[in-house]
Length: 165
Image (cartoon, rainbow, N blue to C red; front, top):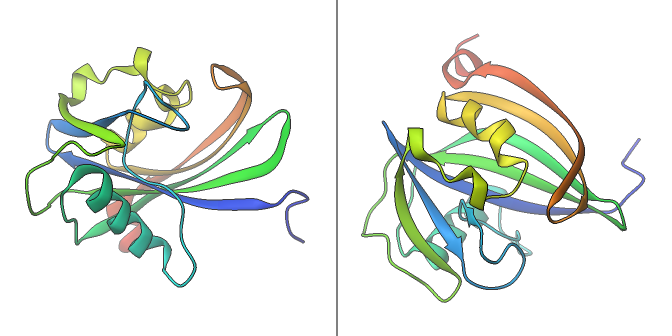
């Protein structure tokens, strides 16, 4: 049985190296004025992983090869029937230098100084798990872009444990 609502498949890739994380300030469109990972829509004919790599290249000017799947998040907005299904990836290595694009301005942050007050309200719940190398699954219900009404979040264990049961 499928969801009763249509889904839009999206990607989110965060570059995380040891004690630092690369985020981008969204300069236009959905989520403008917020720090976020890099990502967007999956286009026809590309895999979810290919879309994640393309979005990082377009938004941050860097090439990521090795992606680890970190999580799956679903977002619903109270007055919108479309469920956003976001596949979250971790990249630890990349080629190139993070460069500002029309859409995003990349900046490194210490893992202890993530700017949660200037991010989506859900990030403070799942991003700490991401930064600990855990994998997770969650659902978030928003009233509007600033109001999180309800959520569930399940930790699935460390990525290493998932690969080597």
